[in-house]
Length: 255
Image (cartoon, helix red, strand yellow):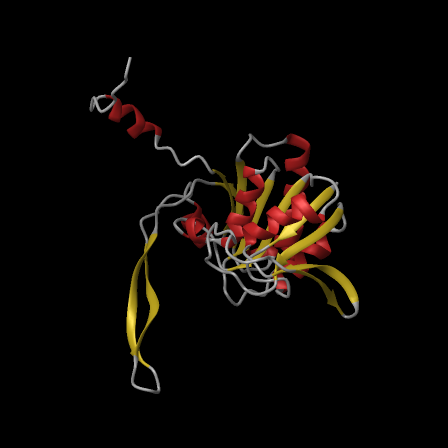
């Protein structure tokens, strides 16, 4: 099994190292990840300047390829240019911080997996719910188990699996739930500050507004110590509104 691994925390992150170690037990791993942290860049791709790829080594051993671009760039160039054969699966992570509810939209980790889905390659994105996470072992093992199931059973075209785990030892995690994307979202504000030269600048801050109170929602289940698996799709069509708009008589057809 050929596996492409990427992330948005950068090729030197602790999470990707844990993931690589575990996935090497089940397949042939290729790492193509951002050279520097690319958190919250969403699905950005590089168009206005050339991408540079360099070999990355850990303790003198080849680890993978570092790209001075976004997570989506990494997956594109990994599949099209670096790997000789199309991977059987792309795994993105392990991300520091949850990617549940509205965070899915902003996440570079999820976008790497989404790019694979756009390219018709099965993919999963994996995150641990802490920016100071210390528990990666179970997340890595679960990722390997899920990757095997995805390759064996397949996914619908365009669908990827978004996985979130509490930053807890395995014996403290209550279980695994199949969930929907939650609706909790950030109430953001740019806080005005003053730099040492007396000039204004703004720093993004805010509070999460919780609106999820069911274990069927990824954020609430994760908050209650469950690991979550959420199937998501890049088709953004609101099909209910699609039908409603037909009754607005907006369509005009030339004969």
